[in-house]
Image 1 (cartoon, rainbow, N blue to C red):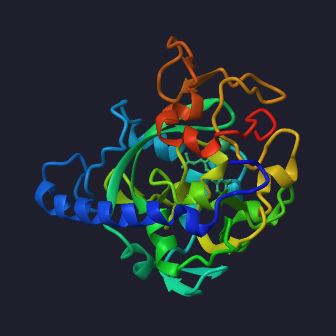
Image 2: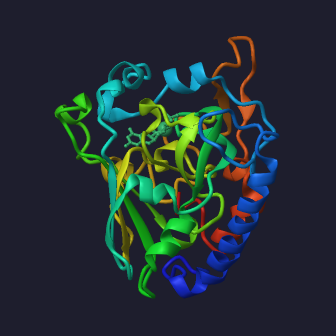
Amino acid sequence: MSKTKSPSWADVTPRADFLRRRSLIAGAGAALAFGAGPARAGLSAAPSAYSTDAKPNTLEEITSYNNFYEFGWDKGDPAKYAGALTTDPWSVEIGGLVGRPGRYDLADVLKTAPLEERIYRFRCVEAWSMVIPWIGFPLAALLARVEPQPGAKYVALETLLRPEEMPGQRAGGIDWPYVEGLRLDEAMHPLTLLASGLYGEELPKQNGAPLRLVVPWKYGFKSIKSIVKITLTAEEPRTTWKALQPREYGFYANVNPEVDHPRWSQASERRIGAGLLAGREPTLMFNGYADEVAGLYAGLDLRKNY
Ligand SMILES: Nc1nc2c(c(=O)[nH]1)N[C@H]1C(S)=C(S)[C@@H](COP(=O)(O)O)O[C@H]1N2
Ligand SMILES: [Mo]
C-alpha cells in the first residue's frame, strides 16, 4: 500500500462481511454467556476476544482524570463541568460518500450491532495511560449500514458544538468543533469501536457521552468524544490537533515508542493509578496491538506519517 493511494470501500468490503458474520456469532454467544461475562448490570454486553487481560483502572480514575477541552484544560475540569451537557435527545448526522445519508437517532445507532465489552489499553500522546473496559460495537458495522460509495477513502468525525453548555468552546485556543478522522480501512478495522458505555454502564459525560470513538492503537486524541456527525470523504479530512500544531501531531497518530514527540520521549508511559513508587512502563508499538494492525501500514514510512 503506497501512502498516496489508500484502500477504497471495495478493498475493505470482505472484512465488512467477515465482521457481520462474526458479530452474528458473537450475538448468539452473548445470549448464552450473559451473566457469566465480566460486564456488570446496566448495559448487557458480551465479552470479547479483543480484550486485554491487563488490570483495568478504577471507575474513579477513569472518570476524574480526563482530557475533554470543551470543558476546560485541566484534567479535573471535565468531571466538574460535563454534567451540564444535555445528551438526550441526541442524533448523529451521517453523510458524504454514502448510499444512505441521514440523521440517525442515538437509539437507532445503538441498534446497529450487539454491544460488546472491550477492555482496551489507552495511551494519551502526553505519555500517560490507562486500561478501560469500554462497552460498544465496531464502527465498521455502522459504516456498512450506511453503504459507503466506491470513492470513499476517509471517515471524518465531529463533536457537538454547543458553547452554551461547553465552557471551553467559549474560550479560544481551538477552532471548534473538535474534529477527527481515520482512513476508511482504519475505520473498518474490527478493533475500532464506537463506545456508548464503560464499566457496564452508560458512558459518563466526561468520557464523551453519549457516543465516542475508541481507536486503541492510536494516541488518545484520535478517540473523539460526543460525536454528532460522521462524513465519508475522498480526501484526508482536517483534524483538530494536526491543524493546531502540524509539526507535533499528525493525521495517523499511531502509538510508536520509536518516534518521539518533538518535546518529549514516547518510549515509556506513566500508568494512571500505579502510585508514585511505580516505575514507568515501556510503551508498546501500536500500543500493544501490532499483531492486529501493523498490516494496515505496510510500506508506509511511520516516521514521516506520524
Ligand atoms: N471532543 C473531544 N474529544 C476528545 C478530546 C477533547 O478534548 N475533545 N480529548 C482527546 C484526548 S487528548 C484524550 S487523551 C481522550 C481522553 O479520553 P478520556 O477522558 O475518556 O480518558 O479523549 C480524546 N477525545
Ligand atoms: Mo490525549
